[in-house]
Length: 85
Image (cartoon, rainbow, N blue to C red; front, top):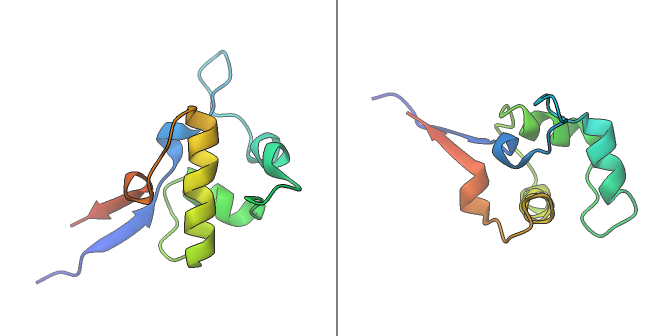
């Protein structure tokens, strides 16, 4: 039996440019710099790309709150975790 893998993926909440391209990590990081939900750019990049396979619990919480701000509605931690069988 193969192990289940879980990833943090916030791409569906990520803001886009008018042409449909994802906004840069730096531009989104600047929005939250100096706030209580500030997070470093590397985990933000990994989560945006759906490649965050491990994380500090505090960062998972912050990513959920960041997605809530970006989406304009509450986003639960369960919504940013993707399970791959």
